[in-house]
Amino acid sequence: MTTARTIPAPEIIYHDEPEVLRQAAAEDFSLHIVPPTWRSSRFSLSMAWFGLMSAMFWVVVGSTVALTVGTINTLIGIALSTVVYGILCNIAARFAARSGTSVALFSRAVFGQVGATFAALLFGVTITYYAIAEGSIVAIALQDYFGGPMSLWYFIVCLYSAPLVMRGVRTWLDRINGILLPLYVFGLMACVIWAISKHGYSGAWLTQLPPGHADLGVPGWWFAFTVYMGVWVVVMMTWDVARFGRKEDSRYNGNFTFGIPFYVVTLLINGAVGMFIAHTIPIEGQLSETSAIIGIVALMGPFGVLLVWASQTRINTINFYLSSTNMQNFFARAFKISWPRTVWVVIMTVVIFLIMLTNVFGYLLLTLQFQGVIIVAWVGVAMTHIGWCYLRGIRADMLEFRPGRVPLVNPGGLGAWIIASAVGCFLMVFGGSFGGIWAPPITLAIAVVIYAAALGVARRNWYVEDRPFDPRKEVDDPWAARIRCHHCNQAYIAHEMDRDPSSDHAPICLACASDRSEFLIAARAEARAYGGTAGQIDLATP
Image 1 (cartoon, rainbow, N blue to C red):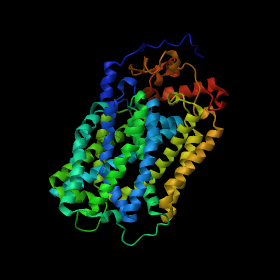
Image 2: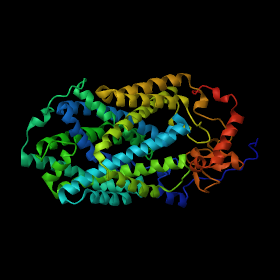
Image 3: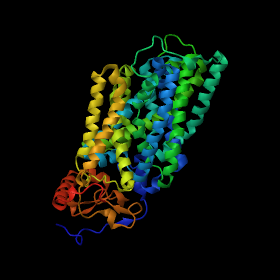
Image 4: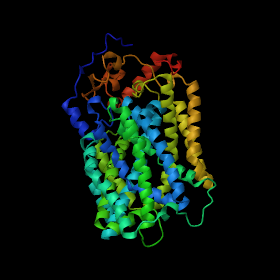
């Protein structure tokens, strides 16, 4: 075996090289750990993230749920969701900033390499569907005002959306969303005032009940709460954006940027506005999922179109960005196709346009229900793991995610995720109305219980493949020191670097290590030879 005296000395620097920064302007370290020097300020991060706040989806879903259980029940369910969303995203944001991991990298640590690949695919596909839904809302508003074929407006929406996300979070998304934020805030306020001025105010919308009370078998507020559980993909979105936050800002960002105050506006206020508009502004035909959007355009004319455009452009910058990064991650890991993120922006824009041409709302919500159940299971496992780390005093930056040092499969994490997801999907298919309502909470409970039980018997080799020559231990500060990769010749922080046993243990970066089959095969062989029975150490052992 190669000894420590014969491995090549690493080339260490303490600054970001111009070529790395040039690539990061578009790639945003999508396949790497975000170094401290590329983290965003509180204001910059909030401007990028607040695009989610303006999504007309929240206006639509609030008014849609009210059609089933009435306004009061919907508001109670949304209020509960506001608290739960705030707590979950607070926890996710802090852990993401302190660990520097994306959803894909965290999933690699908890589910193994196979599970991480599927997590990236699930996240990418789900966000793509939301990009389709949000883009379709813009197209509906444009067609309602200007007329013309819907396919034309779908094309226009996709055409202008793609260039907006060619740059990264701190180089463009924060700026475009900051510019459009006043349009959304003042536009929404103007819409409410305009509606009251033209149609008067009546408190009847607060006591609206659905025609022909449906027997759901549960209180209406619980039904509303479970509907919002289906949108817990927001926790994943939080994770991938919060990793750009500075470690010293993690408490502030967790409490405010991604916490309960944010969701008071995003869920509660937007939902209430949607219900008010849908029941105040008269439109032709029955109330439907798009009543609030059509009502805004009917009331405000071109200003309504501008409001819908501004709000949807803000949220779709996040959707298109996360769709491209996660599909890039999936194809890089599953098929070793390492194309730049900008290429994936173009690919996913074409995919989004083609799917828009189908009957989007006819199947979109059903598809998202199933994906929502699987994501709820992911959230359950993730939160349980974070809680376990906290109780054991394991810091977020101790997480092992490097491909040559984690197993293909973590039986505890992946088993909990698969079993909980399978039960949830079974309830969705065969459980009737009971399954549709109870699938998310039952899935969550199963994921938490199974993974918590698995942690009680977990072994170190579920999470770590022990190998010699760790670059993290070769530098004074693995978050400040950069080590040059022998394959791509770029220098990245030592925290993500490894040694390549297929190339005389030369240093190799996270992205290259994930892509090179020679490295992965050699690393597993080295772990088997080096680890022996070391893998049977309890996971609590540092």
